[in-house]
Image 1 (cartoon, rainbow, N blue to C red):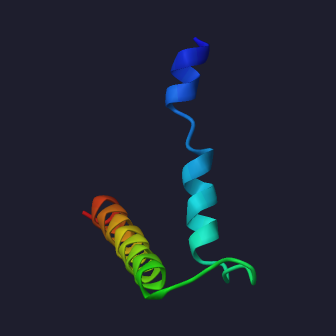
Image 2: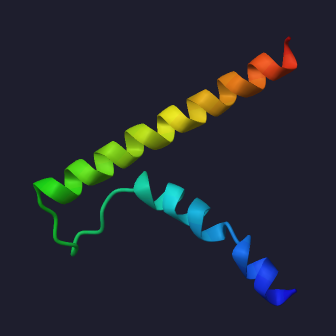
Image 3: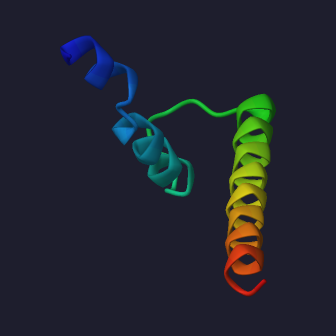
Length: 62
């Protein structure tokens, strides 16, 4: 049962969502590639949440 519970742990996913939208720490190295990767991740997360909201809206009001 413990292994099954480990497979469905999603706390790390939510931690990543929160961490992506925070300001970077002052001591971390940044370059163009890392900034671009994080910007693309932010855009994709926002688009995903928007699409989920639209799907829920359509399911409720149809």
